[in-house]
Length: 266
Length: 327
Image (cartoon, rainbow over all chains, first blue to last red; front, side, top):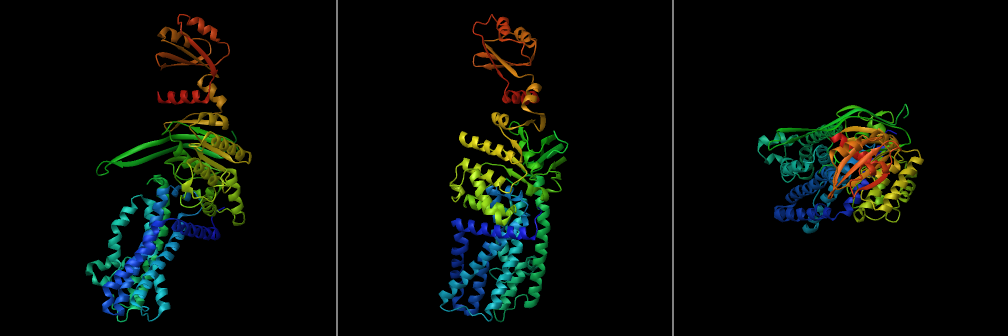
């Protein structure tokens, strides 16, 4: 029985369910999912509370992004590393389900968890500030927020492929973490960085999406100055490129690990 | 052996490459399999024996689609494992065993449910099937406990349950009773036999000779990446030189005595080994004509002579084959 659309969909749900169960069973996730967003939110508020409501929004967007990073991007790759560690990568790959669908299910869960982290940051600041953060169009903002997570997830899928490929992926991800934070404009806009870094940043889908989110949320925001819609086009384009890369890479990565035979190494 | 074996391999080779040195500039090549030919028939229990590092797990991973061979032909249920793994995987099961390979923080039932979904066990039968396999491996009472609380034996049972969950036609078992207490090991062997009765073909690797002898219709001995023998236990006995094993023990024998023992009718092999202060000669004997009394008369000048006879065991056969290959 070759996997069809139904069985692949069922696999996605199974992975999603497993992710929730392991998340709930593992207290270490309390830090990135509950504690870190509260800390990020309070720090953002303390730094910008005197600078007016839009500066606060500006800061908490960054804090929210940092919180989401941990869940969405880091979590997607990390789960595959955990499969290596537990020795579950072999039985998972020996199943008829293509591994890309296993990663897909995890990305969906991490996206939800990331959104939750972002929401906590907003809630913390709103409570501390004493009133809701001013948003011109809350529905558009939430949709845009979701879109940012999708762009983060597209990078997460590529990281997950790296974890299947080599047990040293964690090292690469840890080294690149801070550069990614800064390079995509999580905490502050990329335009504040030296000009020569901008092309590197623009290769990453979240850079475009985060800039679009700031256009949407902060009145008078300048960003890259090419406007909201070009940001959206750039984000969609680069995200699609990353997803195509991930799909292609996963096929060759699965082949590679079967050639090398190090699935059980940690 | 049938014309359409379930597992068919020809000249399977596998080379592992790794890099050593400070700059990883030294390429190290290890040839784990050096041309393995095997055929396994439908419905049989086939055993693969061999010392540590002989290539058993490498071979098991290749036939179960988890590792690609460097060269050679590997077909399971008529599918080429290098090109049609996606078609083959739903029809085979693999049990690698050990402490790892399970999600420790969730229950045994949740582990099985996850893999049932990945293997496409029909939704309407899934929960019933999980209950069935839990019952079969005697884990019903522990089904809702976290796997991290399990003993090694319980984990081994859970590995087995996962391996048979989707009703595979061929089941690969890599040392399935390792770490199990005698009672659990016996139950596992019973389970293996019941699976064969259901029509499942079993490919088994083990270090326990009695287990292989008890379960397997045919056995292959792998040593240093090569199959050194492949037959039924009776066939292997003939190959190593006889059903009978006679052990002769005394405080030393001279070369002339050993030569004379070798020349006795039906004696195919004489191996000497030190046994404390004494020397033990182990003789494989092909015929029934040779009597212990003949040997006793020949070695009458040894006052402390001890003579024993027993049936040649699979362990004897195995050691003969592996030592012969090593020498």
